[in-house]
Length: 374
Length: 119
Image 1 (tube, rainbow over the protein chains, first blue to last red):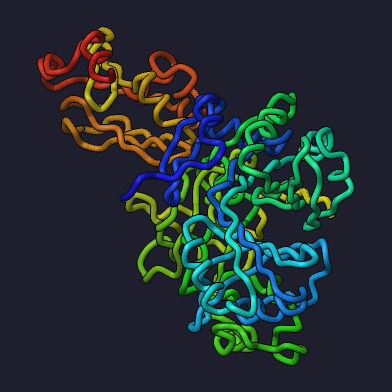
Image 2 (cartoon, rainbow over the protein chains, first blue to last red; image 1 turned 180 degrees about the vertical axis):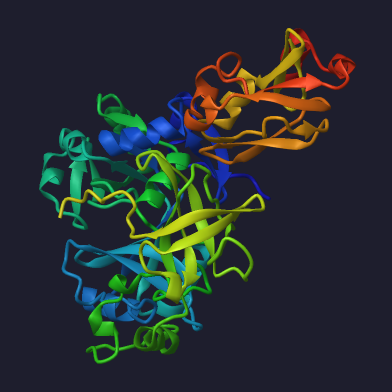
């Protein structure tokens, strides 16, 4: 293992007393002084500031947006061409087997497509885009900007003090705005189930912006620990846990992300990696599905917990892929895959924890209602 | 009071030994969200896993520090696991046991040695 990378906010994390841990090759804050539980609750009730600069930021340029969009559609089963300027969408890099190689966000920024990918996958994602898109499309990796997220019901109030126009943005809008004398690329989105923003800003301005936000009463610094429990309650996938190279978007319950124009009968049907399996899964259904899971007892069911249909005997019918304690839910929460016949909400199943089968119920996601500014 | 390298404390109370986890351990674990206690009356062997503590981060085991019998468990922790963070050395004791061989206590550290151990 080589030296850990540092984000432009590393010194600020240390000054704030963060507990730092290695994550996807970066030295990242897992929690600050408040601790995971209070950081989670603070984000749900006020506003939390997250450093997500470890994620990959990529700009795709062509002669026109249409050229970029058509080329990018060769890599993702999404409607890129029909995405209006100033809007963002959730996307997936699929593989030839119809599995998911990464999940991402992409935005129509007028003359280019702005793409944000997971830290752990970014090298592979960049290689994939270069191989598939160059030289027709230029693939510019952004290495001189931090990425921060401000999430929670008071995020808009807080950020509008610095850039008033962000208050007018709707969920999944993107805009370029001035923040403290520098250009920020803002999207109204996030990974917590709350209203909020993700902000790309020049690395040398990032600490000042974070400091200005942290000086506000509403805002606290939040680590990766709470980021994980927030996204779990919100029913959002963690790449590598809940979706991976073997899971199809249909199994993963991400059908909503596959716009009709790329499906059977659509104007631009197929034409992405794994289209045969994915369109087949859409037509014929799947054998396993991702579901929310709520243990009846107090014991958390962590990733890897085997799920059974009965309190005794039989083979596992599923497995937990993410699980822990939901501070807002006030109890253990999980998600995982179960056989399709067990995927109905309220189905009573059993998770094997330390050799004992404990009752767990299939539940609709999100487990905590989302609070987006539509 | 005695301390184990597993970050448990042992306090003699009449003819019983009260066992809990140290402030240092509670801090390292983070917010505790679930505690599974041993059965009252269970005969346990030193170093056997007898309790589970789950924090927001992970699950950890608590070992029986001595051979003996579990005489009483602190059922409050099942309802209010967060007490382990609030008062680990006091109210949030885990169990009381009757030691088969109280001399096993002699192997453990005193407070000064434990403080040195955790550095």
